[in-house]
Amino acid sequence: MEDPWVPKLIAFDDDTFDKLTQLGRDRMATVQDLADEAFADILKKHGIPIDLKDAFRKSVTRANNKSSGVRKTRS
Image 1 (spheres, rainbow, N blue to C red):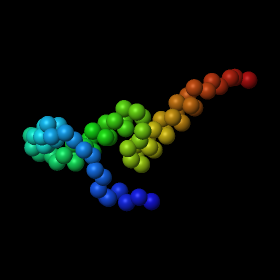
Image 2 (cartoon, rainbow, N blue to C red):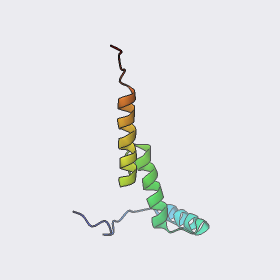
Image 3 (spheres, rainbow, N blue to C red):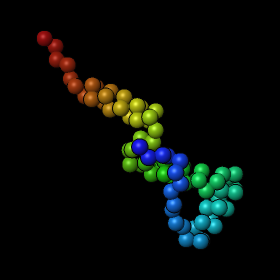
């Protein structure tokens, strides 16, 4: 299993990095905070759970949608 706290490198051009740094200052956040938010938004956009709580919520929603789609007939 991979250690989640091992640093990963992402390259930004200087202009983008400067803008992210300034945005971080304006919001009192780090570039890491901004990256975490951005990647969480991408995962959400594509329907990929970001944590266990989100995965459980999606699982329950799918189960409820399946059960509500089944029609019961009277005998």
